[in-house]
Amino acid sequence: MVFTQVVAIKEKAPGSKVYNYADSFWCTYIVSVAAASVAEMLTYPLDLTKTRLQIQGEKATSNKPTQYRGMLKTAIGIVNEEGALKLWQGVTPALYRHVVYSGIRIVSYETMRDKLLLKNEDGSFPIWKSALSGVTSGAIAQYFASPADLIKVQIQMEGKRRLMGEPPRVLSAAHAFKKILSESGIRGLWKGSIPNVQRAALVNLGDLTTYDTAKQLIMHKTGLPDSHLLHCLSSICAGLVAATLGTPADVVKTRVMNQPTDKNGIGLVYKGSLDCFFKTVENEGFFALYKGFLPVWIRMAPWSLTFWMSFEQIRHMLGATGF
Image (tube, rainbow, N blue to C red; front, top):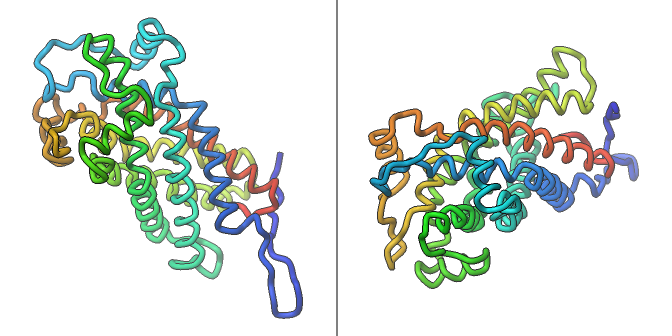
């Protein structure tokens, strides 16, 4: 189905314009959260698999020999050892995260693009402005969403801990939240926030910037209309670039968040993201930073595709302008 470009501006009187509600801040925020929730539910098992792969073989935390598994064996192992529904373990805080993260990243990017940095007179948006907007919006969004991400990572690892005979650390999202507060205070909710923000900045540099740039470039070079095909091609490009840029920071973020802490909330394994980075490379080699890359990429491609097509479709149905 070909989208018809909908102009969401109506003439009220000579010299004045009234904007469609569909282009408002809150409508864009809600639509982005809805689209992200659909994408998250469909691709979440790959996120869980990716997290397990990134923790696998973490020599800084254990001297025990590790039985390595690839992406498929890890997923099958979760189903066989823990049950199929465990592939969605931790999806609740993941959805909570998108209520904050996806809403903020989209509206902040659009605000910077359309009102602060501004497009060129011909409607194009320079790549450096797009990159700056993507990095900034991703970092801001992830900082506010970091507590939900921390809870999600801890819950994702519980099934593995129980199989290894270790006592459970958390029982639910609510329990994890209360436990972190009681042990480390408010600041504890932002454990691992620095690598988390770094990862989000890189991912959004890849996702938002690539999608926006690829969409405009494809339309300009091929004359392709604003359609599902255009959204599909742009989102595939965005998913690949985002996975390539974001996986190393994602590995560091996962390990920092998953490490045990003392009574003051200080990590017992890594002093920070840089320490985790160097220990990972020293103990396991550079390519350990790309552990879980395949499920990250395989997840980001359909996630990006599902998100952007849902996002554009909902906006179109409401009468908003295209992204």
